Image 1 (tube, rainbow, N blue to C red):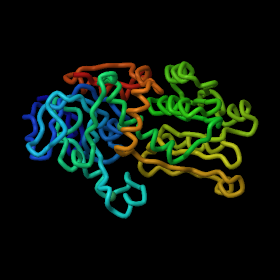
Image 2 (image 1 turned 180 degrees about the horizontal axis):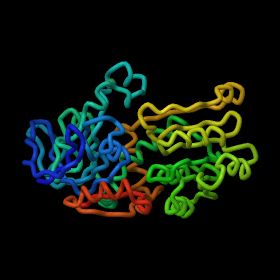
Image 3 (image 1 turned 120 degrees about the vertical axis):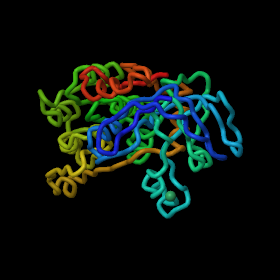
Image 4 (image 1 turned 135 degrees about the vertical axis):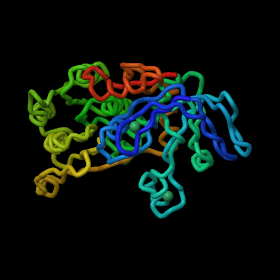
Length: 340
Ligand SMILES: [Zn+2]
Ligand SMILES: [Zn+2]
């Protein structure tokens, strides 16, 4: 079977491997759709240091279940989840599940960009394989994980109904935030990005006004629209400048959600007095758990959100290397999807 692997000393290869062996409590999934995430590209281009496992925004069909697995059978349409908390430690008991020491140690074998991959017993027994209703396509289902990450972040930041919101960075995650904010019923939405295709997508999804930070001052523009600044801002890009723009663009007492992963080691000079005297705050959120995956699946099933317009380009599994190149270099790509 084909699998796309990161080599220890850098570089990415498409290899022919035997399918993984299934243990008593494991589930083997046949990949149907996989979204390419910005974090996959970071892993390839060294943003997180060497190594790593590619592919976590996946959906597929169960090919085989271990002898002790109950409730699943060959052919089930599912969304498996790669990172799973223990649900028992000090952090988990306080709701910081994605900070659990076990969380990032769990993953698919050999990876999510493979024809078949094994979901380990640890994940299966903790509810990390979710069945899909027929009304949700494999493509849409592959977007459940990143959308669930956005949903968790909004549950942490808790914007109010009617809030004006700036979304800085209009990639797949920024556009997903627009959809979720609209389902909550927030007020006017503003977006910023340097790519025209993304500014246009934000407008078509309901952003009232968009700004290109290469051409105009985002904070000034938001203040011209809102009077004293946005109630809330989401930074859905790793660009540190977007964070300082967002801090400037929110009103006194406003909140900024840091959602995009900044490059390792990046720092930012910020006027600390802004946080004290103007009572602005930065909130962070990382990844998601099964609770948000299931809540997102409900939103999707009830058609409260529509993730389909995010997918702009599709490749086959044997074209994965081209797809990864394309996703990191194209100005046209929003969500690039591998389909099997
Ligand atoms: Zn992702
Ligand atoms: Zn834990």
